[in-house]
Length: 481
Ligand code: ADP
Ligand code: MG
Ligand code: ZN
Image 1 (cartoon, helix red, strand yellow):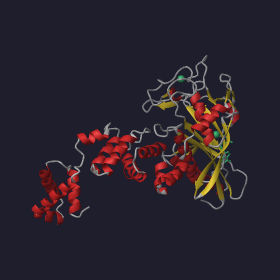
Image 2 (tube, rainbow, N blue to C red; image 1 turned 90 degrees about the vertical axis):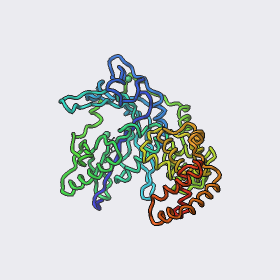
Image 3 (cartoon, protein in one colour; image 1 turned 45 degrees about the vertical axis):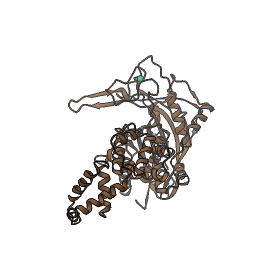
Image 4 (cartoon, rainbow, N blue to C red; image 1 turned 135 degrees about the vertical axis):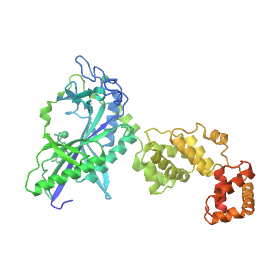
């Protein structure tokens, strides 16, 4: 923070669309496989090939445009951006400059309880380039073209951000919107979201924009925040010492937490953009737009409010449960299987999210079936199954190793607590009377004595009750629970 200077930031955000095939050919978008196994003459741009637009990319782009409140260009078109680099074998990238699919939108962000509008200048579709693999042993570089032609959306904001907090809230919001839409998979691959950060500094009160630098290709929100802090400090220091900020492209090295200049800024003319003659203009019909509007899901804010009003959850609970669409859906599916909202909310917040965090198993797919989950919750809450046993089953389910049929599993493993709890209580009372010594040992802090008592009870009940049930009830009787 500085009282004399104001930081001004504009973003160019790239997200990878989660289509199965590439934007102009039918190659798979999974570029993590062996190098150069998912590419073809089209995505490598060999002479004589023709690109054909993947309609799914178009649908995803229209949905994205709608949630960014953009005007949708009804006659959109692709352009060639010419440049040479070894990861781009055809020496041009198919992108959009003149008629991007979306323009003049905005995103509202909430920072310190104030709503601020970030204007979106435009949003366009383009293809990704390949990847260069530098050998650690030899002084050689190998191109991998698997990523060539993976569909990207680029979102260009106006220079409306004033600090790193606004930027991170904006990026989190984009993440939320796009993962709710299911158009970007933010989990499987690094680089599903990356941003170029344009940053300039001006005197507080000044209307004119200062000279900007551009930090390219930063691929995590945390790194973007650090890059902004680092670069704004650097610029303010320069200006304070009377030196100018040079317009240049910079690289932010997040490990070393420093940036350095790469090249003085190129401009659009250097790319000699022109309409791609291989791709006809794309007319976006009313029908396509209507279908996109109809397919928009209920987003986090609306869901959160509804969870409060419909299920009487606290705002805290509703915020957690609505933060991710797939868990919100699972939560509601569990309720429709007959579990009360309060109980279901408790299970999600107390157990499910915790176990997912502990097991780090959140791989993008919902692996739990709502009906099996509801069955488990029911057994535990009605005290037919001991909570500890129930949570073990839950952990297995979250790990994808749970039983297909929870009920059958519970029966087969004899996990059902005998309904005759009174009988168990009677036996326990008797064991406590018969083993005064062990009881007083335990009360004097000899924890081991409890095992002996459990054994005594188990012997008398002939294994009718599970050890954990016996232990729980014993502890209760001994006043420890
Ligand atoms: P280019 O296409 O050459 O990268 P643009 O003018 O299209 O440049 O802007 C790219 C991004 O830079 C936009 O997000 C825009 O908001 C931002 N930007 C432009 N000028 C400035 C500036 N002086 N300070 C901060 N951001 C800026
Ligand atoms: Mg740029
Ligand atoms: Zn291909």
